[in-house]
Length: 264
Image 1: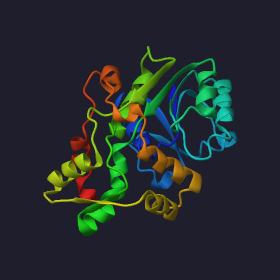
Image 2: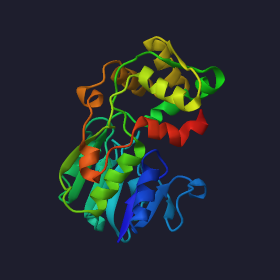
Image 3: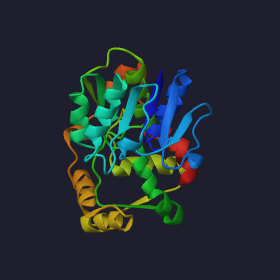
């Protein structure tokens, strides 16, 4: 029995693949560029993208993980249908921030499914790397609390739902163990680096323009900055779901920094 992981080289996908391998599962990982995937030994890496479901092979696949990305809304329902028709009987999905067509199709698929609704990723702090290395400063428009979640915990919850019973039909809100403001996270990063890092406030439009310069669409840029300007209660409030599902505490932001401090 094979688990097909879409988004296998992304922030959560890598952690999911590694956890499935640790559990002894047979994994097929989807990648646009298999030669550069750099996934664990034993993983079957195949070329493809989940936004072109007609090109995918579900041969031998009984479980499927989907990470919602740009472009999936138009074809996600087809992806789910093809998977079910091919014999997939258990699915997990990392939502795109709201219940869209793919999430809805999975919920109506008739097979076992689990929807993961992670809040802000700890890895968003990597966008600070250049300015921290170059001038010990972080430039952000807001300083609001966020219960940021470690990507490895998202992957671990997905692996649990794919390989263990009792998670079918569940919707899991995933956060870290602390609600931290931007300044809180900067202080933790600074302590790890042994340097003082400042917060320089920028305007909302400057934040939008920064995303546009990185190739993000106008609609997505406005959505992201709008979310950060007024995050929902679920994003600000610590939820113990990670701990309940995994039987251990959720990873802290300090742990995440320790794993990535060389990037700063």
